[in-house]
Each structure stands twice: as structure tokens, then as C-alpha cells.
Image (cartoon, rainbow over all chains, first blue to last red; front, side, top):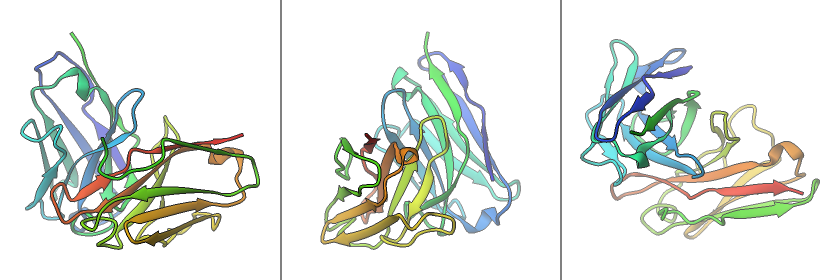
Length: 119
Length: 111
């Protein structure tokens, strides 16, 4: 089970931190991902990290602005989002990968948290 | 523009079959068997249908099947039902960064 939180309304240029609480599986064994869906658009993979958090990866559209991290002692995944623009407005999902390293196979998904960037 | 190419839309009548393609390169779809397919009804969480090209997770109907040839993976849905109307996405591992590629999505309409 995955449960996202931290979404909300933020002004352009602002920051927000999303959290994803995991339960029901050994969180520290699996890579994790953030995927978003903007209004009227398709799913977009945003970021992923390995089970240890030692290796991270980002979509070009967020690289340099977003930071993915995890706390395996608390079973929580994070996404720190900085320099937000209207293009970042979306429903953000966290998703568990089936491997310790991201393979793009996401077998458990949260319900999502909405981020709206607007003045 | 997505790194994996899918048709924007497909449509078919109930009871028929459709196939959705997902085309990549030797660095992703053609080089690895880490291709997955997802069903997404807007407003719900995406659902994993197929992983490792052709494996169905427990609980997924055998009406869904996956395959791959060269740089193109395919999802086939047989015996179309009204509830199959949704958006479908493929993903693949890539040996270049970013290492997770997501297709642009295909909107399936069941007529």
C-alpha cells in the first residue's frame, strides 16, 4: 500500500515536498518511482531511485529542480520540488518497482496527490 | 515527445481484439526484456497488466497478452469489454539515462 501526501496550491517559483508512505512490503528492498499526469496529458515518468537511495534518475523536464529521496527507516519516499512552474501542475503518483533498481515495472501505485502551480 | 512511440488512439467493437504497439530502439525495447504495460482509467491509480514483455501479474485477466519483436513490443486485448476502455501505456528500461522510459499512451475506445 502506498499513500501520497503533501500536494497543494503553490505559486510559480515556489517549492513543495511530496511524501509517500509505504506499508505491506519490505520498503528497503525495492526501487521507487514518481509518475505524474498533467490535466489533458498522458502519464509522465518523473524520477526514480534504487532501493538504497544511492542512485537517482530524473526526467529531463525536472532535472535540476526536483530531488527524489527516501528514508528506509521510516518507509517513506519523498519528492522535493523546487522552481515550480505551471507545467508541473499534475496528479503525482508514487509507484513501487518490482526490482531493487528501476526497471520501469511498477507493480504497486498510490492514489496520487494533486499539485497545482498557479498565481 | 515520448521516447517510446505508441499510437494515440485505437477503437474496436466489443468482443473483438486489438493490438497496441510500443516502438523503441536497441537501447531500450530492443535490448532488454523489461517491457511493461499499464492500464489507466483517469481518476484511478494505474494498473500493471504485463511485465517482462509477456508475464501477467496475479489477478490480471488472460485476455491481456504481451509480446515483442525487434524494437517493438505489443499488447493484445482479446474479447474487448466496455471496461477495457481506458488509456494504455508501455514502459521500458533503457541503458541510457533516464533509465525508465514511458510511452505517450494509447486511448482505447470500445465502440
